[in-house]
Image (tube, rainbow, N blue to C red):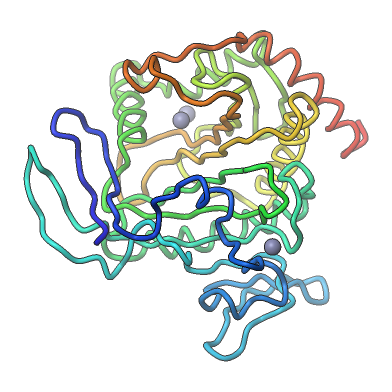
Length: 340
Ligand SMILES: [Zn+2]
Ligand SMILES: [Zn+2]
Ligand SMILES: [Zn+2]
C-alpha cells in the first residue's frame, strides 16, 4: 500500500507506505547500497534498466537507454527507476475525503546517478554538472508529458558517508506539493497586484546586500533574508524564468559552474555537512508562475519542538554572517576554477 494522505486540519501532505521504510535513517544513509553499491559502474544489472544513459563519444553526447538484457556501461549520467520508490504508477486503492483524505500515491520515482565514482557533491566537476542538467531536462520534459503528473519534484539529499553515491531524486505528484503551492500562490498574487515578480525584485535587491554571494551573467547566489536553516543559500536565474526546462546550453554551463563553486564554497566553510539541494520550479501543467530557483539547506542541527510544533525556526547564525563566510569561500573556489 502506498497512499497520499492529507492532514485533517492542515494542507500537509503525507506519503504513507507499508514498504520496508521503517528504519528511515538506514534508508537515507544506504539508499542504493545493499552489500555493494547498485549505482557503481559494473553493477548496472543491479538496477532496473536505465531510461536514459548519457554517453560521451567522439565529442558528441548521445542519449541512449538500456535494453532489458543489454546495459550501457560507458555512461556519464544514468537515470533509473528507484529501487525503493516513494510513489508508484501501479499504486491503486481507494479515494476518501476529509477528514480522512487519501488517494493512491500515483507517480514516478527516478534516480539520476550523477557521477561514476563515489565523491562529495563539492567534488563533482562543472562539466559533469552540465551533463547532469542535460539529463535532468530530458527526463523532466518526458515526465510532464505523462498522464497523472502535475508536478516533478527534484532534490538531492547528501549524507556524508563513503557509501553515498552522488544521486538526485526525481519524484512526481498528481498535484503541486504544499510548499510549491504556497510559493506559487504568493508569487501570482504579487504579480497580479504589482505587475512584477517578487523574486525578480529580490534578485536585484540582493545584488548589493550583505547576503550577496556570487553573481554571474545569468545566475545569482545569495543567502535568503529569513532562511529556515543556518547557511542556507539560493541560486536564482537573474532574468524571469519559470522552468529549468527552458535553459539554453550556455545557461546550463553557467549554472553548472555556479553549483560547483557554491557547493565547493559550502564545503570550504562548513566541512562535510549533510545538506539537501532542492529545485523549486513552476509546474508545466499550470499557468501559474514561479520564478524557479535552487535552495540548498545545510543540516547542521536536527529539527526541534519549536520547528515541528510551531513552524518557527531558530537560526544560531544570521544570514548576513553566513553570507560573509560563504561568499569569501565561494569566491576562492571560483578563482580556482575559472581563474579570475
Ligand atoms: Zn557507488
Ligand atoms: Zn521573476
Ligand atoms: Zn523556494
